[in-house]
Image (cartoon, rainbow, N blue to C red; front, top):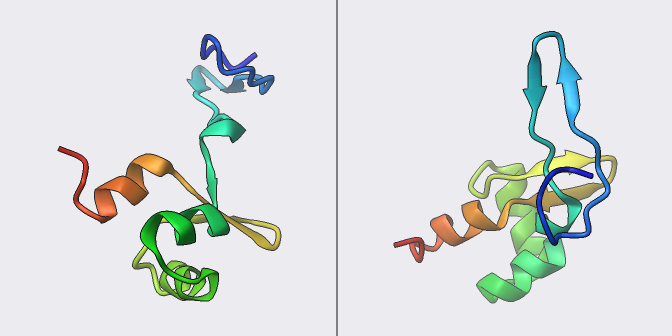
Length: 79
């Protein structure tokens, strides 16, 4: 378990030397299609923005993932 109560996430904590890194629960990540729907853009537009660094994202294999908190901040709704 990742330590987040009630999320159902079964990721383990990552231990590196003396530090324990908090894992990012898969349920908290947004996929390209989720961001596109949220922003009212096409998936292609979101991918172009991610490639250009205009939307903070992480690529795992062929898939892009976005933290919801950063997407919300991007549109200025995090107040």
